[in-house]
Length: 385
Image (cartoon, one colour):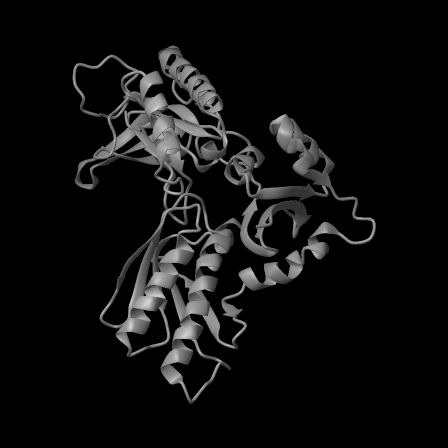
């Protein structure tokens, strides 16, 4: 399969566009972010009925902190585990501010590499869901379990499967050493200190997208081309290409103007003549599938199944493109045949498995509405714009 990462200026933004088989599947704006940063935070107040606290990571930047989901890393002397206003502790930003919600921080720290994620607070070694359950995966998992001290854990990323055992262990040791140093030095820093800054937005992108399937990284921004080359292993630098733009701008070559118009509108047309209507509300994302011009009076049920499956494929793509998250309700075209309904759900589940962000099928309600959830990590594209 041909996978390409294209980075260019468009509509006053630096856009990173990921293409699979010449089709745009993900679009991210390269902007400053606090996601993944580690801070010495000060507790502002504790809200018992919410089982939560609000902590300041920088003057005026207040974040949500769950009391149920975290074991606190106190930095001030304490005789109890109870959290009170004024306490100082070590936290990491796990979610950016979304709509009216404050950023979320947690006490389970992690550092992300290209092959491995090293964690503190969860002493287990996990593996990416996309890794095969075979001897090689198990051997890498066992090797990490042996080299991690008590209290530290790790997650094998998808990229690790194509790498050597030595490379995986080496990156794990380097991340472990870095995370240990952060924890040991935290007590010497005052409140609001940033002890670790996550990679630049571009660095995060390369961590996410630089996999064996990626065939080319193309940009028309010389500074970005240089930064990408410097950050990639020497063997991968040949993937990077700087577009001169003498004949045609890069955004026009990839038809980004057409795709941009599509993903910033509510209505999305399908090849069959049917269309989707995508509404992002405060509570959830609602998607309606309409037959539109796709009409076939002879084989009605088979036709509806075909249109619904086409819609399911496009919905999975639009969730990635628009970075829609939370509760997602889909109103497919009604079908009476139970086997057709099962076929549709199986097709939808296969499509959402392609998503890097955790996405899950929940249920089909009595009103034939399909429920999905998609993990909230970053703002949706509409919010960023």
